[in-house]
Image 1 (cartoon, rainbow, N blue to C red):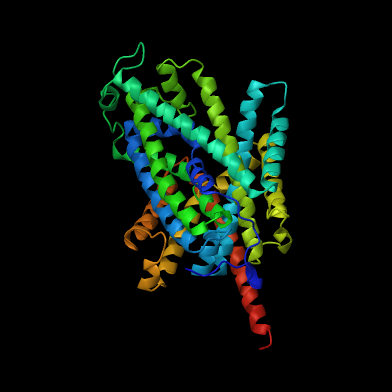
Image 2 (tube, rainbow, N blue to C red):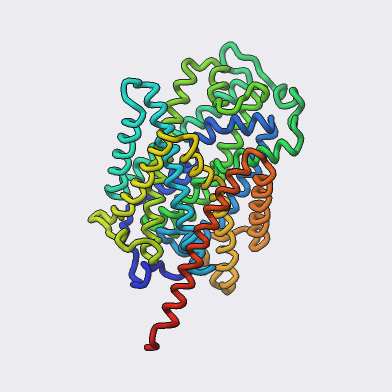
Length: 468
C-alpha cells in the first residue's frame, strides 16, 4: 500500500501542483457533505421515521464513517489524484480502477447539474428579471475559472463556503438548545414532549428507522472528495489523516445534533417532504425572515457542492487519463499545475446535463439522475473490497507503520459491506427507490462490460507482443 503514485506507463510523479493547506483539507471534509440534502432533504426522512430519524442518521453516519476510515487508510498511505480508483486498480485490477473511476465521474457531473439548476432556481427567485439559464451559465463560468486557476483558489472558495455552512449549523444548534430550555423570549421549555408524544420516539417502529436510513444515507456522499484532494496538499499523508479524523466525527455530530434539535423543538407530524425542517424551527423560535435566511444557506451549500464536484470530477478523469483509461489528451497541465483539459471535459458534460435538466427535467434528465441514484453504494463497496485486499497483502510491520488504520480490521470492513448490501436490498423492495437501483445497476453493468472488453483486448495485445 506504500507504492509511490505513478502516472500511467511512464511511471513519473504526478504533475499536479500542491497548494492545499491543512485548513483547506479540514474544511473541505466538513463542508463536502453539508448541503441541500441536509437542509431540505432531511424533511423526507423525518416524515417516514419520526424522532427515530436520529437513529437513522446514526446508522447511516456509522456506515459513512467506516467507509471514510477505510479510504483514509489507503489515501494516507498512497495519496493519488484518483484516490479510490487508483486503490481499486492496485487491489483488484485495471477493470476495477476503470469502473469505479468512470462511475464516480459520471455521478459527480450529473449531480453537478442538479446543484447548478437548484442554485439558479433560488437566484432566479431573488432576481426574476434574469433567466434561470443565465444564472446557470454564470455559475458555470465562475467556478470553471476558479478551478482553472491555482488549486489554492479552489481551496479558498471551499474554505469560506464550508465555514459559512458550519457556522449556520452551529448557530442553529445553539438557538435550538436555547428554545428547548425555554431561554429565548416568548418561548417555553418544550422538554421531551415531542419525543414521547405523537406515537413516541419510534412512531413507525424500527421499520420507520430503516426507511429513514434509505432516505438519508446518500446525504453522506461527498466526503470522498477530501481524499482526492490529498494528492495536492502540502503533506498528503498527514493532511488526509487529520481531515478524515476530524471531519467524520464532526459531521455525524452536526447531522445527529440537528435532527435531535428539530424533533425535540417541533412535533414530527408537522414535517413534510420537500419543506426544510430548519426553516420550520427558525420560524418557531421567532427568527425573522427564516425562509430567506435558509435560502441563502442552501444557495451557498449548492454552490459549494458544485465547486467541489467540478474539482473532484476533473481530478478523477485526469487520474484515469494518467493510467490510460481515458483519452491521453486530458493530461495537459497548465502552468499552475491544474489539469485544464480535464476541468473543461467535466464542466462540458456537466453543462450538457444542466441543459437536459432545464429542457427535459421529467424525462431524459430523470433517467440520468436515476442512473446515478445508487452508484455511490457501488463505489463504497469497491472501496471496502480494495481495502480488504490491500491490507491483507501487508506484513505486520507495514500495518504498524500506517499513519491511519481501519478499526477492528477485517470485521468492521465486512460489516460495512453487509450494511451496503442491506441498503441495496431495501432499495429493491422500496417502490420509490427501486427505479434508481435498477437504472444504477444498468449503468454499472455497462461500465463493467466496457472494462471487461478492454481487459480482454489488453491481454490479447500483450500476448501478441514479441518477447523482449
